Amino acid sequence: MKPSLSHLLASVRVYLVFGALLTMATVLSAASGLYSFTLNSIEGKPAPLADYKGKVALLVNVASQCGYTPQYAPLESVYEKYKDQGFVILGFPANNFGAQEPGSNGEIKWNFTKFLVDKNGNVVKRFEPAVTPDSKEVVSAIEAELKR
Image (cartoon, rainbow, N blue to C red; front, top):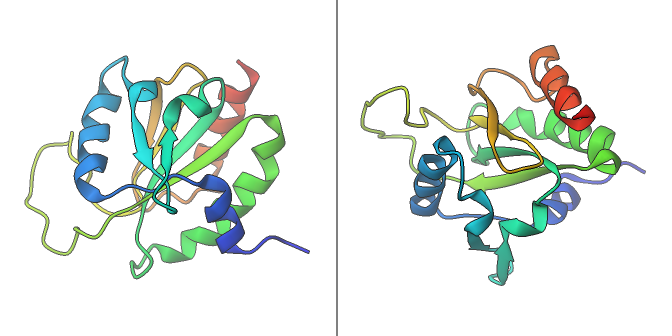
């Protein structure tokens, strides 16, 4: 039986409030710092990102009432396909994009922006919200990082 979305999200474990998401996105632009973060899990327990060192990760800011919410299904299928090869998806709920202040390209523009992180914690690709997790672009990038 295929795991439910709640199973996927439980597997992901790490959830974040918006303020920490923006801080993390800023740090992700730099070459270091990802593994120095410890965030609270959905259960409120410390969840060090260092636990994911050595894995390829797709970081996604999610929102359950967003027009991009149908991407949960492809997120789940991509996770299921690559989880045994050292791949994880980390979901970060955000509740702020209804009235976002316009800004530069360095700001996250909307929900379901995706960052692909290599095994050393470096952001190697960014995918905008309309790019689905199961698109050729995302899957090819995941596969390339898993082979490194």
